[in-house]
Image (cartoon, rainbow, N blue to C red; front, side, top):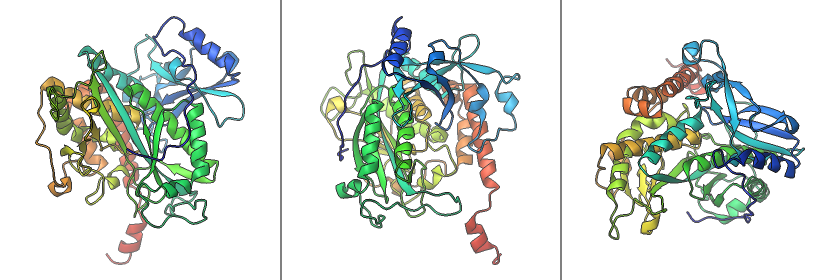
Length: 469
């Protein structure tokens, strides 16, 4: 997408990632010394996509420090509760996981007062096996299947979010913040450069943070909502893109807070504004980097592309809990909104859940438009790749491309979190591919969240039903 790019990129020397060679531990320690780091944030993305972990003084941090966290962090709801079957989902002893840093993810924390590093960690069992509940391991499990086929997925996420006034009372609706002019937005400002510039101080800080953290933020645009923005990331391998979305959310929230506003990635934060998505562009290359979705003739697609697309169409409805993981997510997926409501596909057709942009053969890709900005990037990418993988191995075929509005074809997706979880639980193919223990735990956590939500009586019910029924 065209956008108002701000700021340049200056790349620092990259620390080798885990498994790249025997010098990775030395490189990580050298990086910490060169940056005069005093503290290290050991980060683990949880089911929601938020950072859990520990802060360790740099002198006590080492590559095999033996940092541990209880595996129960993955079986905790957004309200801090636990599913009733908690001790069936974790070990009866509620044991620890062993954390190991991925040196390729080390970055400065640009908003910290003292020199601080942040490093994403992977989770392992005591016997050295990857822990099944860790979202990074779920994505890695899917990527290993593609590696077995000699394929390498490439993705590029587009992440939307809102800037809103600080809100300390959850009963009070969110409001757009005032920009440099002192006035909040009241009209649609899609792709407006001037509307983006209203928030220059926040966005300049965001770009400074992104540069310091070596995030591949490509373009920035103003979306259709009031103070709604979108950042696009340069395409690359799925793990690195998930890491970057995870880190960007932390940086964006911090930049906004330092200017007295919130940055929210809630899928549908305001009643009369559109929702926020995380569109995922995806393609497939071979060992030489050739795009395997392109066909032999101009305007044609490969059989691999068609199988992949067929897998998305068949399995996305069952994978929706990973694209729409919260009760609020389904407010975005509504008839009449720009978000998709079914699995139709088409060329450059934004009403479809699966859009194939018009581009050169080497840039052939499919854009999945299902995930909300509230989705865990690791799980959203694992899920979309899992759907495509099943299409490849089952040799599925897609429907004909749609040239009209997909909205006219009605709903083809689950309408609520409850329905979505039921469909996922009944899909054996996805469960086996993503990991039975992981799917069981994820569904249990989300069911508990839905039960907690359903007990809340809304202001709408009090206003319209209290004295009239």
